[in-house]
Image (tube, rainbow, N blue to C red; front, side, top):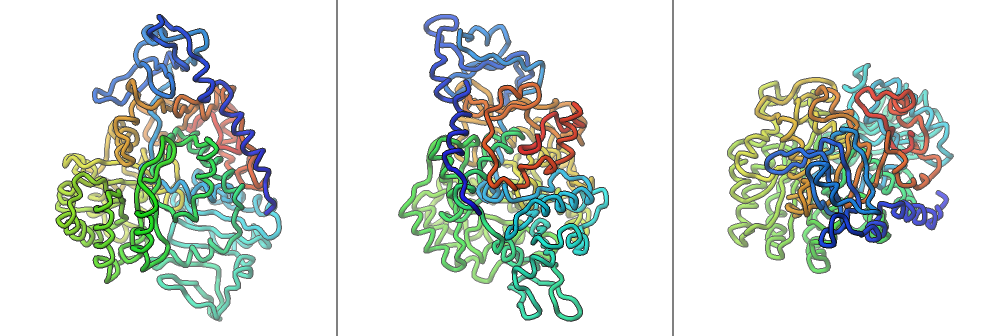
Length: 620
């Protein structure tokens, strides 16, 4: 790919920070607002319905922001006393405001690295529309490049309620290589992609995966994870990559998309250190991060994880600043202790050496006070991991060392008690919103109804965070996850969760705000709009607390503030939106309005259909 002009990226983005909402503007907007001992606010939002998310679940009508922090929250009359001659005042027109959303398990690094290359089907409601997007992108993709759909969708969201066929994909893209990744379950390759990959009847199946063949032994284009997803990654990793400048651009576009949805913080579930981190690190060094990020590191070298983690412990330290933190190790700590997230296939067992491989790593992390998180989809896996944690704790007491159990969809009451005894946290996601029908078919309604026992987890005092596990096993959209936590229904409408596993709207939002702060060690700093906390907030397109349940997944932010800076503005506040950085490469799916036609149509006719007035980045 042709390299982009890095100066364009940095200059345009720096301009975005100088439009009256960046740190320099904030510092310049001091003045007197009611007395010399009461410095004026930089930004005041008034005439709203502001969910403070304090312990009393208070609401206010106004909030004042100064130096990136909440200076005051309360009535319009009281807060406007902090108005000075340079204070920016925004009329909320009675809109609902919430603290910025915090996804406690989203793969931001990997999602950002691929965002500019991906046709996203997250919000596509019909397979016919999805195929049309593939056709249009194939027509505009230059020779040598691929068209790819990389997860975040389920066939049950489509009106047709089925997967695309290989024939349909070959028809819409006969000459351009196409890969359609269906969660971490299947991959669909068109004939052009098979030719580029060189797959033929002599290509062996990788461990734990299948290259499906016709009666003549030739690959058909269907890849199946059984249950390991290496067969899918082999194809994905063979497709062309972005260069370093494009990676920074792609990550920046992804962050702006997260801001559009009201996200201001993410605890990344894990990425390969240091290979995957150039995009997010370049943005951090340039001061261009608009989402606060906390990162977990994992090693891709199966069997060599201890050696790599030993190097990290020697060379790095957990911590960082308000926008980039090394948060610890995980979520994949060893390949032998990874049970995938594939619920279409039978539950896999952990490797025979899982316990032996984990114990020295847990000892090392406890000794050097490195936080960690560990993936465990099934309770059977949790039951093998917990004894190793308990042994490590006996040998080198954790004594408050922060550690997290990820997913744990069907964790039992006894294992919840053991997690509580070890003072761990649990991060839950909406993966079953995309695979719930498979889980229901395999394990039955009784077992499905017991999954994600969040009320029992909270009753034991265990820190509980919410997230998506986007962008492949689920969409990155937090509102789909919130709808899942409240209704227990999949994106296809099937009820999975029982009453004990569903939360009311206030508690679900608390898990996505205050609850998420624990996972990056920032409780007391963010998650609520109390004075002294980070000024991270989202003004919503509709009232989260009163819209019909099925419209929750269509909410978005019309004004997002991170650290006192306006980082996204749409609809009635579009004039406040920071200048957008041009998408690189120019043929990217997100650079075209057809990327998400349902949103674009809603924006053009002035209606929202529950989705709000603003289209995704690149669709406006």
